[in-house]
Length: 176
Image (cartoon, rainbow, N blue to C red; front, side, top):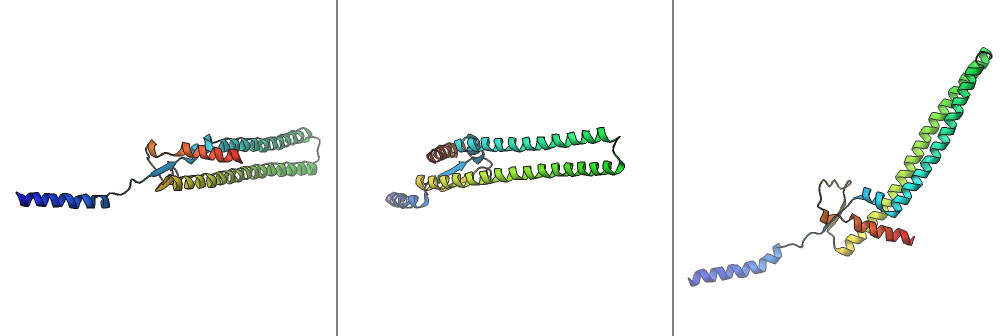
């Protein structure tokens, strides 16, 4: 009986010292949702308004050019009976040139808008990730991942720190 008690006491004593060695700190992990930050932060909303305004300006220029091409086409149709064959061919070539310019203008505007949008998103992403990194250091996070880029399929709401990042980002942009 004394032997069993001594063995149990020894095992209890050993497990008491070894348990803390095997018990790791709870891993503090955070997940941010960048798309939500784009849509809900004040800087994201301002950026979206600016992009929308730029898109409307580009569309207005494109519509004016389109209207000009359509008017020129109608003018050719009206004058086609009285124009000589050489002048008719010249007008048709000019119309084709204008149509090609319109297509090129559309492609250029689309590319310009995409580049502007990409640059704005990259700048915001750099700022948000810097804020999240600083937050991770200050609050002792082991890991912070972005929901889409990080390949996160599921994360409980308790690890979602997006709202905190939005608050910090809004505070930072308000100072600027």
